[in-house]
Image 1 (cartoon, rainbow, N blue to C red):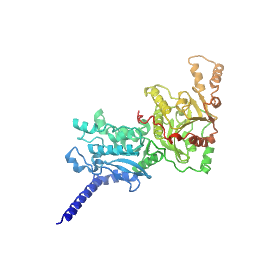
Image 2: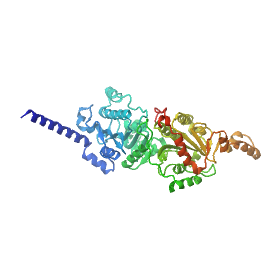
Image 3: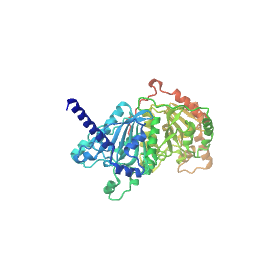
Image 4: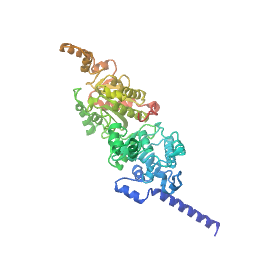
Length: 524
């Protein structure tokens, strides 16, 4: 046999071995486990990646990784339970981590955490969003047990859970999410959850053992808890496919990294029938009476480009509405008081919700539009127990540290400290108001009750006090001292905002803010 023939044979053997290992890794936990998932209507880890990414764009990283702590697991851990790599979403590069629950419950190990660390580092340094497709049983046993396990696995990467918001993070909770898959969801800018999934520190079984009573998964970390009570989930869906579409929509509003402006879409025709009708709707949405409720989301939808409003946390902190939208094809963030709930009075949940949203918008160069109609902050024992003063100041600090353009419009009322939090007092780049706007320290009717507390006062004195309290509360008092720069007819609101967004474009920095809150905690 010639040297050439011998070399060719060795090459064929080596290539056959590579093909065998690749096929084994892509086979995940095997046909039976994959079949059971399909019968439940669940996508597997690789199907989720295919659903997310543009066809043919996935470049996997770490395909041949296996468990390295326990020798017996080497032949049982294809790709070590986590699919990692890079691809494109609508033509833009992203990094992706998809947990493969068919391989040891996608539990965290030395190898797969190295895989995650690698793509996270590449995405951060090269300016790509990261998408986390979460479903994991938590830390792998017995790999993490003992001093060596702890020191090797949990102490291996000091930057493992650092968020400096250089690139957007989006997460989907698609099954059991314990341990690291829960942590990455909490660290993300946007989290969508499929009904039936669970997000918690540890499993309900472990929780039951720890507290000595049975704990149900839904009570521990189900979609209703996180969408309505904790606010850790931004959107809720029925299927894996819907969750992936939500992430694609979220990414479409944001830049790939913090040093570029958000992408623009084609601007709608301002003379279209839809936009003309929306301008007329603005005359009717907000009732004249300050005590009558309405849904502020209808105002946002009438002002923004048609069908562009993408709401965050719709069932959490409902006295405020937050979400991304487009104005003339440009990405903007809306924050609106919503009098449909609690008259629009801001509570602790709303403060947290708005603060997180403002931090994200500022970090990724998204201008903010604040629509104001609030009687102030809700006061009382429950709020104080939940650190209301601290939450209000977090909200205030975020607004004042924010360096993207901020445009505030007072629709109806703005009282007390909330006036400052919602962009008044030079906390916005431009403040406008509708003719119906009223600004004061508090509602004049309540102020009379305050100053006459524990006193016997007849109706004539009360009426005289009320007239004093109402003095100069109207919009023209603000306009005369330039506390608002423009008094707007409601139907002109969209035109005004489009022009102000153009005027306040950060031309000197090419639309890039200073990102003073890049390291702000994602949950607080």
